[in-house]
Image (tube, rainbow, N blue to C red; front, side):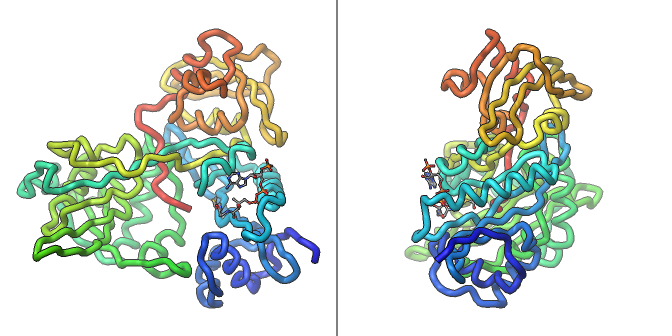
Length: 416
Ligand SMILES: CC(=O)SCCNC(=O)CCNC(=O)[C@H](O)C(C)(C)COP(=O)(O)OP(=O)(O)OC[C@H]1O[C@@H](n2cnc3c(N)ncnc32)[C@H](O)[C@@H]1OP(=O)(O)O
């Protein structure tokens, strides 16, 4: 039987394609037509690859357009990669490598600044030029140990908190999220497509998802302007008539520090809730330090999250902000021939230029390491210690850090 890799001919192939996705993610069984249709509503068949062995789909790979905020608040177009699977019967024969190759060629051709993904396992994507660009942390808060006084949990900006239903959440949420991702230090935040809002209100589900309807609360400032929201679900447990219920935060977005404090303190003050799980937050989230006893927040997860694969180096480097003036010549190796070369970056507080050059380089690195450094969440000095960045001029790694590091850590709030 011949093995063919191609984009989907039509949406009629989605049930078989989603069945293969489910197999790759360890979920057995057919995917009903209606479910595949709902999941596939915004799926572009031209950007959806399948590997077919006879009539059977044994490999899946999909990309979609994404906007990703870079330091300074500009959003750049990314080729977001998702639903990557190869059937257990067909692994380690190069199917992923072939699907990735054509997706990255297409993204380069389209003019995307980079490709992005959330890696299921660390060792998969480095070989294709992706580097981990942001990390995530999740805390579990032992509420009775926090030392918080629920009487002081209200907003401290003269604002108010109200519960909201799904409809209000979907009405207010998208605009609020768009304001959030345009803020200066939100590098790593991505746009939330309609699909995200539908999934988080239970309107589309994937086979095997155990969806629990969430609660929502909105924070409004003293002028009545929405400045943040939080959604959470509750896992109930009572033990000998004592509450051991856990609130699991699904998302918390705040535009102002006052909204951020108020939303966390609110979730931490709900009667019967003895544990709060934070969901995936930035590693420098303020949550633990909001508590009189920060040790009541136990770090549960700390892991790489968003990975970036540079495709258009001048556009990437010219679009982000820099805290100081500086100049750096980078020698970038790219085995796939997509974005390598020697580039001179001249950066300042008012903007930057990045051009190819034949001057001698300050730093030499693989394209994946640029993906890792780009959002400011890794240190070139550290990568030099690891031998992953080569200093061609002494002190160049430190200069790179002065240019690239950011005051707040990169954070991608959403899995895709
Ligand atoms: C963005 C996302 O969707 S993340 C989700 C990724 N999907 C999964 O993890 C689901 C379970 N896993 C799978 O479906 C498959 O194993 C995949 C998709 C990860 C890999 O597909 P394959 O077709 O087997 O990969 P392919 O044969 O092209 O491998 C290329 C190289 O990567 C290596 N590789 C592939 N997967 C892994 C892995 N999980 N861990 C370590 N190395 C890996 C291979 O050994 C091979 O190395 P080599 O060139 O030195 O021989």
